[in-house]
Image (cartoon, rainbow over all chains, first blue to last red; front, side):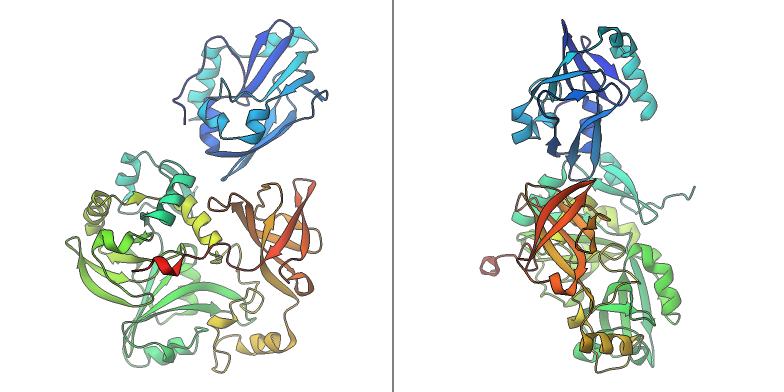
Amino acid sequence: MADESYPDELSYHKEHDWARIEGDTATLGITWYAQDALGEIVHFEGPAQGSSVAKDESYGEVESVKAVSDLIAPLTGEVAEVNQQVLEAPETINEDPYGTGWLIKIRLADTGELDDLLDVAAYRKLVDEER
Amino acid sequence: MQTLRRTPLYERHAALGARLVPFAGWEMPVQYTSIGDEHRAVRTSAGVFDVSHMGQLELDGNGSHEYLQARLSNDLDRIEPGRAQYTLLTNDEGGIGDDLIAYRRGADSYLLIVNASNVEPDHRLLAETHDVSAEWALLAVQGPEALDRLGVDVEAFTFREEDVLGVRCLVAGTGYTGERGCELGCGPDEAPRLWDAILERGVTPCGLGARDTLRLEACYPLHGNDITPETTPIEAGLGWACALEKDFTGVEVLRRQKKEGPERKLVAFMTEGRTIPRYGMRIEEGGVVTSGTLSPTLGEGIGLGYVPAALAEPGTGITIDVRGRPRSAHIVRKPFYKRDEGKEA
């Protein structure tokens, strides 16, 4: 398992998802806090490439031996890529939640939504409150 | 909100960084590092579980044997003092109030180790017994190397009093993992010293998460999930623990059900595509999942559930409703995992 961290350059959603914004695309994943709460992740149920995901709505599931959790999209867009490595080896999410453990890439439908996301300070505050 | 109870080892668990969760009214460690690692430690070497939340009921004196013989499903005449037996506490409808181990200490002296959540209901059904749970801590040391690490030699389903690593214990050849090993009962004040000594022997601390995956691979039912007051031993495949020729609570129902055949049966099944079955999921052919996990040993989704008796044959395909998605599974013979007897010295 990775050590606890929340990279400064990412944007966060209160359901413990992160987004890395590069122009009009975003890479999505779950935070260290989310993967730690789940424990060893054994299954990732992702969306189909080309399908749409909607902000604040479920786009898939991650499942550990203990529990299942919905993946909540922090932003609206069309799925450009699903991480094949994570489909085949879901434990990658535990090992490197912000790197090789990313889940999907989307083409953003509305960059205005970015204003609704949390910065790292706001997200850390939220994690501290949930503990 | 009810205050959670803590075992004498709570401080040890906290110091090891265990993730603590509420279980049957107790604050218990679900894992220390990871369920998978702890599971594999028990399958390949040795692990120790704090199971001090479990309950102990005692009955001594004239008539004790007869009293329990009339209320527990298995035949206590088949065990001598120094031996233990898996048995069931049934209700008037033949349902399973609890499953437990009866330890025969003398001709008319018994210790019953029961599930944590059932101490009070069991005590109501067995009113003559004394609840001595507060006098006991219980550690389960399990795995192919468990007995060697402790320097203990105890046969399965026997027990005796003995010093283990310098602590006076009730040493029993019982467990809930499908491996060789023992359960050690001692006074609550002695438990931390015994725990430390066991860890010093290189035994891995294991939480309730691994306990559940281990018992499920071995197809040991979990009371409250796989067996309940609403399910019978005949339905659950526990007829072997019921002496139907003697009289005990609910026996007429069980005799009739055995003769006519139960309408539903508790079966083991494996899913396709590593789907993890979960408690309460609907089986579309008519039934319900009562336990499920991803088997750390097999790397496949495994589960137990009730299905109509006609579908209980190994090989039969079933469909499980996984959060609205139909997922294929098939019935398999129990258990999922059986230890290699050849490895026993």
